[in-house]
Image (tube, protein in one colour):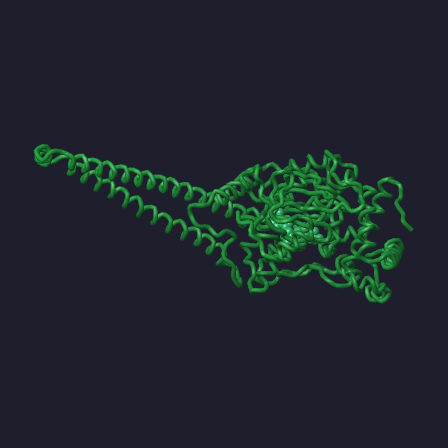
Length: 536
Ligand SMILES: Nc1ncnc2c1ncn2[C@@H]1O[C@H](COP(=O)(O)OP(=O)(O)OP(=O)(O)O)[C@@H](O)[C@H]1O
């Protein structure tokens, strides 16, 4: 891998402490910085103990929190490590590097969905319904997998979904809770837009809250806009709690719009589970089309590979015969004139070799032609499938989710095979397994990624103070706490509340989400019977 980095990247890496080319844990070589979030810096690395494969290391400074306290508990780490699904970013482990907590995950070369949608929007493109539904099904399968294991993501947003080989992968879950500081470390960074009404009305988080967030993502896939968005925190909250669910543009089907409306029901009980949605006839029909298409591609890929092997064998045979004939000619040249005359009379061996060579060449040409024809046929067929599927839809553009050219690369083939078997498993399972209980008591479920502790709350508070200053923090904290305690969010008068909003909330709405989350965590600790953690 080329480790030459530009000056800017090198400077950024040096400033962040991990220099290019430096090696962590005697195996992870830092290649480049992928970006920084509010709590972590993320790097692309190569793993010398795994055929130089590319991986991602997320480095989270522990600040003043004791390093030990940042380590995920054994159960949680075990749980994260045990999750293995084609549409979930694989968690590969964690380690402490000096004062920093580092987690290793698989690398998704396509970056995150948030950036991807922005790029499409900038180009004036839109996603076809076929494309949206295919990605939506992948997310549903991933969320269903988590929920069946009683794991809630709690921070589903386009920034936490990644693209790999054309498929989507849910990432950063558990990271928000399991890895240091506060389960809301990532949740709060401008992501209140994806939070469900029950979080604000203090009914607690449950699996249906993930469904709400997934609904917001579905809306974003179709419109490139957030379903609920506003720079004022209070306005945003009241929008989420009170405003009706937005409709999809008319180019999307009524069925898809209906699914969105159900996912964004204000009452979590009315929201379908991921499993329910996967069982909607509209979704099943789509899933079947995709499964058949995948089967076809994989079968053809197999045939092309077999033909390629045949062509390779024919080429090798041809080469061998060529060498043999050269050897034979040399032998003849080295013979005495009398011997050569006799061999010529016997029509041997050159004529014989020439005949064989011609025959092999013919087989080789035929194989080659067949291979070319097959490739053309398969690629056309793949495109036709996609066009046919998309042609019913009114759309600005798109192309297919996969850019396929046969034969598939090993990675593509693995991705498509995993995708195919995941879909097949789902389509073939006619027994309805019960969905996750609607209300999981977060802290009481062993193995769920949900409980919080004082260390985390302290860390979140430190960050709030760092971002808002002591005075600003206290002002926001008091204001929101008052609001939280006295008001029923469902009946807030939007205009009136906005007028009383401290200036600091208007200036730094994103930072104020963290304070809101702090209150939320404090309250949950109280509810869980933990000692009330008050700073004031
Ligand atoms: N597994 C991954 N594969 C590819 N890119 C990744 C992966 N994980 C993170 N990234 C990219 O690294 C960058 C930094 O990610 P990070 O999670 O540190 O911050 P963020 O998500 O941008 O912000 P925040 O954590 O505050 O929400 C982002 O551009 C993200 O797309």
